[in-house]
Amino acid sequence: MQNFASLLGVIAALTVGVVSPGPSFVMVARTAVAASRSEGLAAAMGMGAGGAFFATAALLGLQGVLLAVPSLYAALKGAGGLYLVYLGVQIWRGAAKPLLISGTARPEATGTGTWRGVLRGFTTQVSNPKTAVVYASVFAAFLPEKQSLGFAIALVAAVCAVESGWYALVALALSSERPRSAYLRYKSWIDRAAGTVMVALGLKLVSSVRG
Image (cartoon, rainbow, N blue to C red):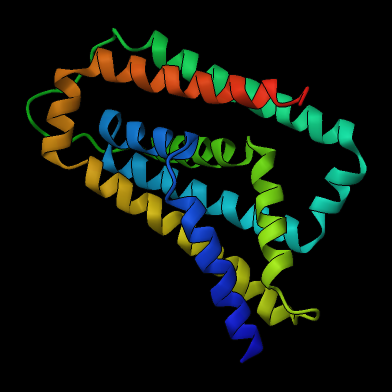
């Protein structure tokens, strides 16, 4: 019963963070409307894999390592911030490029596109080391002193399901015809806005290295 209550506490706390807008939301939303529903769902799966990675790291005590070696934490923040800036610049540069869509058929991701979506989702998720500290803090607050292997596996699986489930809903909602038509109509402006947000989030993360 205690383990179940701990599991619910962790999931509830992390869910609040997951649904908050950030670089992950921007990336999945744009992938869903600009690429395909399949690639958007693949990106959501990548987000889930990133969440599972952070959950595993938190269980293994990554927070302690980062706090014990401040230079490592600073380096990870800087690298993650630069990666977000890179993604933002790429989105901005492609804002003026039209999407080549034949007819009215909904394009679907190829095998390459699917893997690209998974990789992009995963790398975007893990590019922010602050998320690792958030996971570790939530786990420290809710986890019982002793956990079985079965409990740890269930916890990682639940985190993966929450992350991928939320972003799958985002991908499904924004890959429908009406949002997609609106995106195609205002593509250049939407891409520039998304790119600007991504760059701003990356620069904020980089600037925090000195903080």
